[in-house]
Image 1 (tube, rainbow, N blue to C red):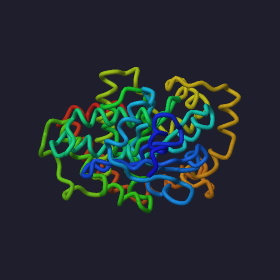
Image 2: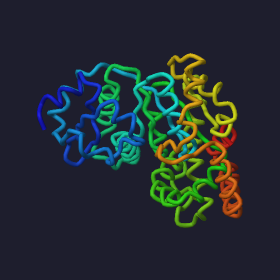
Image 3: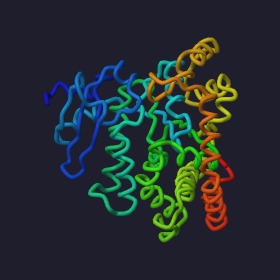
Image 4: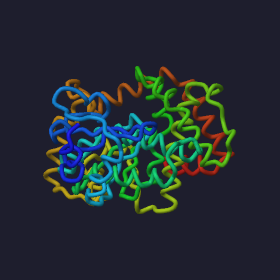
Length: 340
């Protein structure tokens, strides 16, 4: 990889860190145009291909350029998953022009490292983690107002960042139904269960709380919901002004006011006419993760009703798990009270 690309971390909005390799103390630096970023639903490894320049370099080669990047405090979208966060990210991007990064690979890796540091399982110290997270955020923002949408299980990063944040969520029953009804959603639940339960155990102060192998599908979804909402309830209790919650069903029933409120919370600006034009455009009529598919709020409501009917028994099991857990653990009770 050429040095000009590394130097671009300090100066170019098109150059950023795509991935960290802790074991080899290196990072993958890539160049993507603004148009490529806007078109990407997720900035994961699917973006690597034709037209994307980049390569791995040792951290000592990268660090000087990263330290020259302007200091930044990007805004965040945190969410529980499958609750409109990609759509809301695109709407805010369209209405304000903010630099928007959806689920960058490096953010996922940093969230995993944060969990490992908390458990004493990382090769990075807590100080190294904080330093490289800050450098990553500076290079990702590149001196411009920036909105980062984290992956759903990365909610603990709210405790390691400072910018204003949105939290997109749905009610427990709707979440359980969606996670059991969607084609690949049950797989996602299983893949992300361990990191969520570890965090929930830390929040509850109970290293033996729950057992993934013993959870029914509905209870597993409820545990996942609890991990994210308990995390956000904790931040809300410490600094209520930082977090703006968005219940996606309520958002859809009053999108103009809800979008304007989200934009204002992030310190961005847009006019009522621009917001109206954004909401009347194709974003509200197509699937936010693949615009080739038609997908309206009415389509979502129809699918959700089908999922709720098909999985009513597991939804009930999930609710029982959640209610029982809330009685035993105040952080879960706080999440349920705030977002349930």
